[in-house]
Length: 278
Image (cartoon, rainbow, N blue to C red; front, side):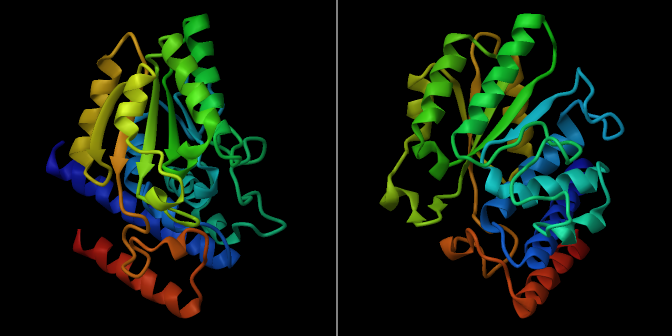
């Protein structure tokens, strides 16, 4: 990836992170840790890769993204707002009773949300169904879905994986946000679903492992996935929970906790400094 494009995406990812912090602070609740860890991926998909048009959010030929780890809705809302699906100012109203931005993605009321999600394990099944539909009707759109590493403890994830491989859904790309932490602690202490690469390979997937914060690696992995024509691809992304906010990084306590006014200011100051340095 050329440096100018990479730098632009870094700026967008930083703005997405700022939107995440605005949202959870405004709500006084939410899930910042696992939202911050996927900001780079979302920046790449929505601003570089996916065939989408904010003016036509329901266009039949658009690429689809299903946020299976629906509690990371602040990240999805932030990228959608920054991409032009709705006003960035709306992010401050996250989880307010009169806001369209619910605690989990809502496809009926939020432009750009392709599937309501949040019950862990179910979103990936919906993505598999979308990919199967595209294959059946000869549609060319691609389907992307983002799983949490802790979410992969759900049996439904592996039922969906088995079916996707059986149906050779090469138009499906599954991203696993492997930040190593879930709500109760480290995933290898709670109920270790790793090794992800060997498991997805055993279910019949093409598997790629990357640094989920490296735009060159993200771009190459997504491009390589698109070249595979006989099976779905799983991209295992090694990430940092809370990425971009120093006191949140690698801290499971920030899985589902909003910063107070003081910590909000600290986070925004750090992110603004990162943005200014780019």
